Length: 355
Image (cartoon, rainbow, N blue to C red):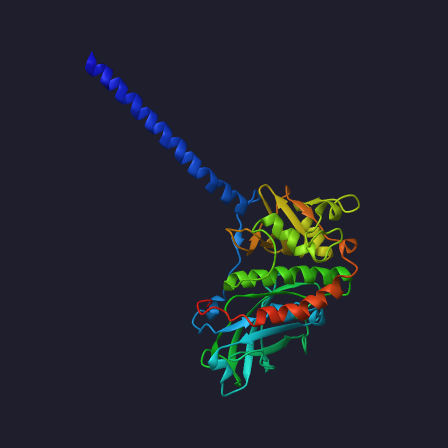
């Protein structure tokens, strides 16, 4: 009898230990499931956009960096061309025996089949600091039967640098500029200009996070806070640089649902628009009708910022920006920011391991 009682006690102890372990496993697993739901949302799988051009995989990674501070200025907010600024620290580029030419692969995010390649001379200008030069080139519609660059659009650009030649290939390549360059064009309306302003702020932040650089922006690493910061400097009703969604989307401009995105995109740009899904918030960039997907930029995506692609869902809550949402003094403020912020960031040496 005593042995039976000992066996019962042992079984009870084992059962208690199993229960505690099970509870601990559930407690540990629950936060993981929540993180996944914040990234994936409820409309289907999400894909992080490619970070590199696969065709440039064999080329050397250059110490050449995009300068978003200059590119974000209102003075280069063009509708029919894109001005790209480069911070060049790569000796083989700075000391190249031949003039430098940029091989530009540009894609309209609303049409993934639209990629075109152009070779454009690079002009070196001032020398902001020792060991670095500023370079610039324009992607234009010169002699194009169908425009490469159109108003109020979002583009992705990959850049390889070459020594000038009659024909270009791997033997003329100096290397490739790491990371894609995302850029938005301006347009005829104040809303077009405002959308570009919002998009370029987020692209600058995305790029700095990709490079591992710090930037003097004040927002929490939270998806909702990221959108409020992104639109806070350009929208009416904002407080301390944070947008007021209740002031923007309600009354005359009510929220839409995800099924309206294709129609909204066909009428005008959607970059800068707000989306909320269960557990997550993000900003729209473009809608590709052929893929049936939207391009997005998302804060707190795995504790960082990512450009991604998602199939839109009918249950999405969409806030569509309108002309009345734009601050009347926006572009005066934007010009001042572009002229002062560049000097704060351009003097920061990119870390040696940033490539």
